[in-house]
Amino acid sequence: MVKLVVATTIDPASVGPASALLAMPGWHPGPFVQDIPSFVNGDVRLLKHDNSIVAEDNLDKRWEDATGEVVDEVIFLSKHTAVSNRPALTVHPIGVPHLTEDEIPPAGGKPGWAGLSNPRIGPWLRLLKTIATDHNLTPEFEITLEATHHGPVVNTPTMFVEIGSTEEYWKRQDAAQTIALLVWEGLGLGGGSGVGNWNRNCERNKVLLGIGGGHYAPRHMDIALKEGVWVGHLLSGYSLPMDDPNKGRNKGNDVGGTWKQAIKVAYDATKSAFPGGEVIAHIDHKSFKSWQKTAIMTFLAEENIKVGKPEDFY
Image (cartoon, rainbow, N blue to C red; front, side, top):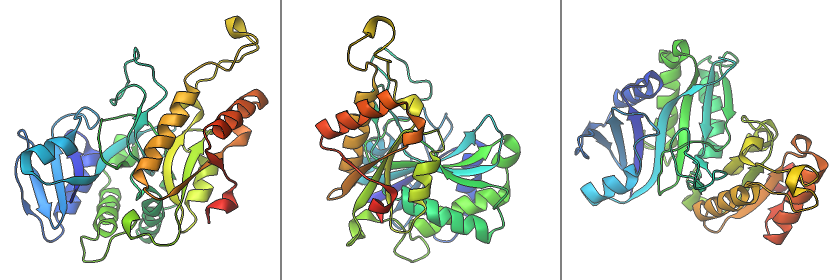
């Protein structure tokens, strides 16, 4: 079993951390996969391609086909953009579970799909905060989760680690070094056991499925920052399209939209990524209107998806 770390040369917030990581001991050249060079260190494989980070689908399967090595997780290094332009270091799962088949995903993935969420997301968020603080990046840089969004298509547990939010920060060497240290320590490349290994988890098995709120999921973040919490998919309000049953053609009917699809797909992907785990939905109640909350709670009950309060996760 190997772990893929994926970078692209056209993104300074991707190639910067990759270069800093490759400057650490133990790396040597690996095989090419369809003209994409790789580097090997223990059970970690780093790929550097020349395309958009969300455009290269199925890199895990392509690696397996080329080398015979089975990939058990993928970590993408990328830039983050935000309207606020605020400097940030972020982690998040991927997918566009709310899109219909006739919609074209704006940034990779495939409609109605959510990738398997990498179990490291919660533990690495906390580790990232520690490393960033030790390197004096906080409070200048915000350390945060992002909601589930964009591609590419991957078949194994996946996460994005990003530097935001403008070119000035994408090129920051101290930010690149912080992300490189996160990967180095998080994957145990320095000789440790790594951070966030679900298969070595013996005690706490409760997994957060976030429903509602904004893109940076502040109420879910409050839970994820607690030690021992595991994080699955996070569905912000824009990933839960809901048609008001009291308006328009749907008056008097059930709540339309693809919100049920999004929740079910995200739940199933989270469940698959955490075998033996107890997936618990946490609702950002303040982000929903009463009719939306009623519809969501009814659907979760129908699907036998447990709903919890913050204290239920630790």
